[in-house]
Image (cartoon, rainbow, N blue to C red; front, side, top):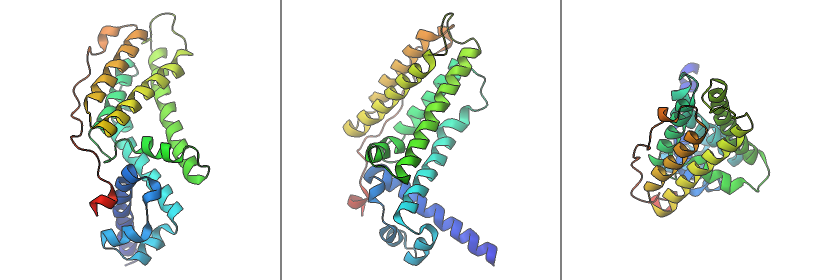
Length: 230
C-alpha cells in the first residue's frame, strides 16, 4: 500500500511537470501557479502543494525536468558516437530538431527562461545558469575531443574551441528566436548551413561533413499561451 501511494505521487509529479514545462516554455516560469495547475489537471490542490510546497520549488522542479527531456532528446543519442566533427555536427542537428519540432511548445525551453531570469538573482536563476553552463561545457568537450582525435586542421589549437562553441550556440539560439517570433522554420536550415560552414573551416577532412543540413519541418503556428488555451 505504501509503494502504491509513492507510485501515485510520482505519477502525479510527472503529470504536473509535463504541464508546467509546456506552460513555462510559452508563458515563462512566473506563469506557473500551483492552484491553477491543480485545477487544470483535475488534481487535488492540497496534493499538488504537498508534492512541491512552494511556487519556487515548482519552478526549480520544472527546470530540472526540462533538463532531463533535453538530455534525452539531444545529448544521450550521441554519447556513444566516436569523437570527431561528425559527432559535433550530429549534436547540433539534434538541437535544431529539438527546437524546430517543438518538443516544448515555445521552442527551446532554456532560451525562453534564460531571458526571463538572466537579471534576477536567486535559486531559479542559478538552476537555469547551471543548465546553460553544462550545455556549453558539453559542446566544448565534444569539440575538444574532435580536436585531440585529429579532426581539426593542422595548426588549430585548444583556444579555438570555446570561440567555436560560442558561435555554434549563437546560431542555434538565433534560429530558435527567429522561428518562434516569425513562425519561420527556414531559420533552422540557415543556422545549419552556418554551423556546417564553421565546422568545415576548422576540419582536417571537411568532406566528411555534409554540404547542406537536412530540412527541418518547423512549426506552422505560433505557440499558444496557457491563458489563451484555457
